[in-house]
Length: 349
Ligand code: TK8
Image (cartoon, rainbow, N blue to C red; front, side, top):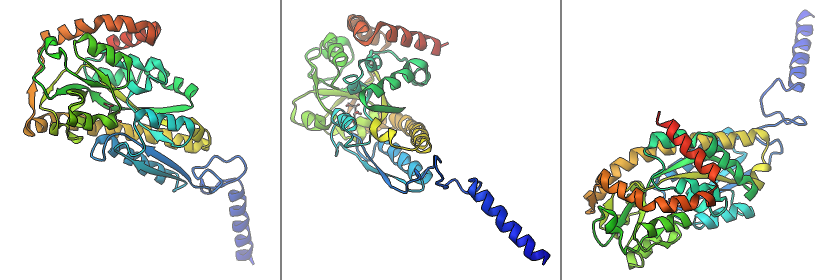
């Protein structure tokens, strides 16, 4: 008899605990915020990037996919597309605004067409090194820019790394400002980049990344500028002969999500995608940094001529673009520019 009473009490206790949600986190009681979203519906994230599947950016996207699908028990599926299969940075960002795509990871330069303040990162020679870039991108101004994306039906979940941009061309070595004269250089679709290369004496053309290799191959443009990892992994060495370590701009990527999709997630799912974007971004940056040093050597092994820019020559380039920086202060926002320079100075102490 005593055993029977003990059994009844155990069953009652388990029942009470389950009713209070004392069991697994998959309880779908009223108002519960669960990773599965509570309604059993599987949500799909269509995620597209412009770089190819060899690039650290795509490996970072696969890491995002792995984390999200595991943490939501498959309630959110991530479909990944690379090499511009879904379009270029601008068209994919517009697709997020329309809700026809859920994730893309553009450079901040084209993003400035949606939120002009992002052009603060297009200020030439703003960051002296990666350590300062890391600190400033984790700072108030950079994080505040992400918040401004919401007005554009976009959610900026984290900064990833494109990296320091270096010049390549098919005409001749570039060692000084004079060597830019007349070079037809493709730039990202960003007015500050365009005006900066004009100030250096080049003849710049804005162009989507998806059109770049063909334009270099056909001689529509003489050169372009991107980090070594992109130059190597996109095989630009096949159509470019000269590379210089101009390091003229540090490009961040922004991990973007469609706001309409993000708002449709449960609170717990929102936390999962946000944390996954941050964690995958750290992984991508680690791979990217390891890649950039390795790939400069491999570009030379593929036959490219490497030109080291001396500090004096770089200073001439800084001086040449100074008027453009002054002109863009008001276009970007004086306060944003002043604050970012303060943070750069503070990051070097
Ligand atoms: C790839 C682009 C690329 C960028 C460019 O989608 O356009 O040159 O540096 O990485 O975002």
